[in-house]
Length: 258
Length: 302
Image (cartoon, rainbow over all chains, first blue to last red; front, top):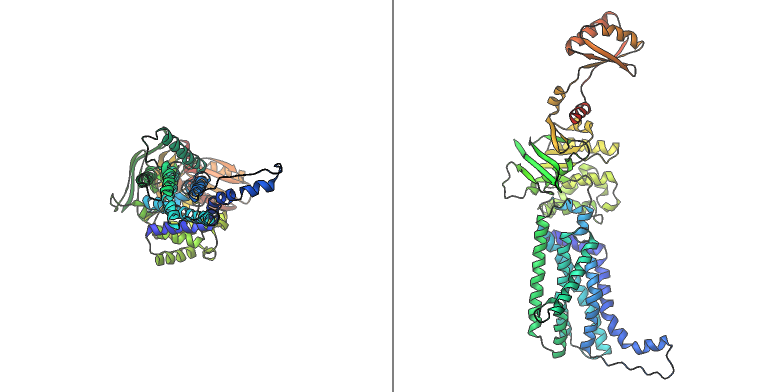
């Protein structure tokens, strides 16, 4: 099957260029950094020194759900950056180098080409996210108190949708431009723009994908899934699929030799 | 049987016509050379035929293939500078190409082996393409273009980036492939076209300025020049030749006497007769066939 051929090629490529190694490591580092560093902050400050004798450092005791949000905070900034950087050349790079000229003169269905790339990136991102949040969960349980694995998996499930959207945005810009730098820039700009719009029109855009983390926090605090979270998740999925379809159409109508 | 008909094909970028109202057709089983100076629009035409560019106007029609069918199944294409996934091995890329063209895994592997053998890079099949030389890449490029047994093989400047050895090998390979499929290739090296193609399309500034079979075109542009070489005293014989009735004029270049004649066969007889009679120290007698180079210059500069 043609789709499997493309899928397998992407998997092997990401293995050989070590994405399967560094992306999970980066996610684990990003997600575990805050739980660990916040816990040891008093000791860190002390060992750095320079404070007068007898200084008492008092930090609030973080609840496990707050620490989860710190991990997500890291992923929302640096994690999103990593996702866009690693996906910026997936199609654009192939167009720029000219490989695409050899591939797309073969009877390759454009939807197979796009969806295979998308699927491989999604698997990579989800696996990395899962490993990262498991790292965070491990430290939370040791250092802050109990957090059930179920709630952590729900966090991964809903937050994964946000990263899915990021990948879809990147794939879409990949079909529009052939300079990876521009693809990365526009992807990040789009996400920032979305967040600004969501904040300005917060009363209308209740289900904007940018609100996912907000509702995830609510979920952790109330220990139940708010209906807004479900609706936002659905909206996120719909936008992602829409972007994929737009990417397929763009690639189909585009002159690939330019 | 006509394989491909191109009618009134135009392609413009930003309002500038790169290909202008080009029409041609060709029979299956032929080898057609698209010749033209740099910037004549050769690559644009080939890319349009391969489906990488969309025509601004005009039609491309493959015979025996329905409109709804994907023409890419029947085309093999090698760009001027083929770029591969350098992290793949030659064999992997071949199987990848085969699988994308709807061959089975086993069939792809079998074809890949056969073709890599044929193009002479079977020894390097498990090496990363990143480590291939230019000539090897070109040969891999041809092999991947024909893995699905296309009806039409399109090659963009297949030999111009190769050294003389690589060039010879690729030309020999093309001669073999000619037996199995229709080949359309572009070149600006005229002797290559002369050597392997049946038909020529001469392109200049985006327009077809001349087309036809090599034999017909040669006849059409034949110039009537006889070249004579002597062991001694060329000037002396120049004087004698000039007295012949069929000779228009003559000149000497590098000790070779070039005789321009009005009637080719008459002049041939006259010169040979007098040469035998007077026992001229003649070492070479050449009837000049117009080279494609001459024809090309003539057509392009007109």
